[in-house]
Image (cartoon, rainbow, N blue to C red; front, top):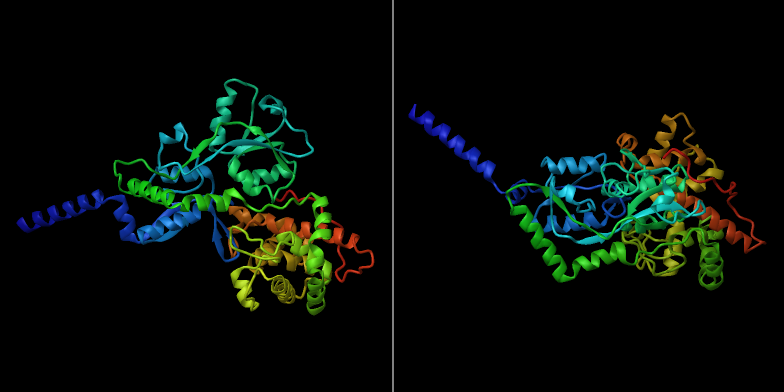
Length: 464
């Protein structure tokens, strides 16, 4: 009996010690930091074999500080991010969360590391609203359970006729695309999200701010245990003191290169000022790999605006925006060298072109190759599978481009081999290249293109 009592006491003491174990120690013992985030250009995204995003890089550095692995978890929607962190199902939510009084009643925020402003967005050409009262007759949708809902509710106290719909399926990027497609009239996004998406959705405009600058912070479960919270405080203090936080903010928010896809005057101007330096290289690469040089030039303009020193936040560089992996595969020693970049880009495009399924005919084959150059062969194949599941032709570009945007929806990408992708991006990528190709051919009346280009496509379909 005495031994049994001692055993039970030992079990109770062990359980008590386990329950009292500091949160930070639990993370280090398991060897894994569990971080909730969301797919967006400002938080966390996947492009080919590269992981990127402001929040992702911050979280990765914090995990390295703790000496543990990083596990990123992306719930179905923003509401689940808040609920899961509130329930203690993850260690941190690093998702560009606005610090609000309502949220502070549910979760604990770390130090402020950035500020954003909520902005009302509309499509250029549909009429710019002057103030919030101008939108009461339009359709406004915002992300469900977001800080935008809180702000609109506050504004509604003064403007009772203000109305909106909470969308529980789409994130900010998805709602911006709906505005671009004129499926809704307005949405509200944070200024950093708008900045990151502006180049991808060039017809969208900011009407006005609907809030004062608001702070962003990491979220943690409410608890009397300060161990993780204090470590987060120390992390951000060190990041700020070293200047690394400013560098990261600059990388993603400061001077992001954005191309104006609708300003054809800029294309015409660069045809005169930039293209002559590289025209011979495009022609030689076209002859070597069997492409019309105008196509390669249009592709390069889409990638870099013919700037050999162009570099993206994910590290792709040069006239053809080569990744490190592609450069290595194509034996490129300097990605910023124009000749190496053009020939490697053309060669890589040719290898993709040859690897595509035989059932894809020449008239469509080049558009599939360009899409794969942008998003990767794996994601393109996933889209072809989804196209076939929906009863459409996986060998027709017009059918596949309707289903590529599904790769950004949980319902669909969860069924695929390669998972989430920004499927709308390669659709716009191909459309833009076709537009630039038309402009280049217009400047060279004697040119006879090798690739027969179908008519310019309509805007993105309603598959979103």
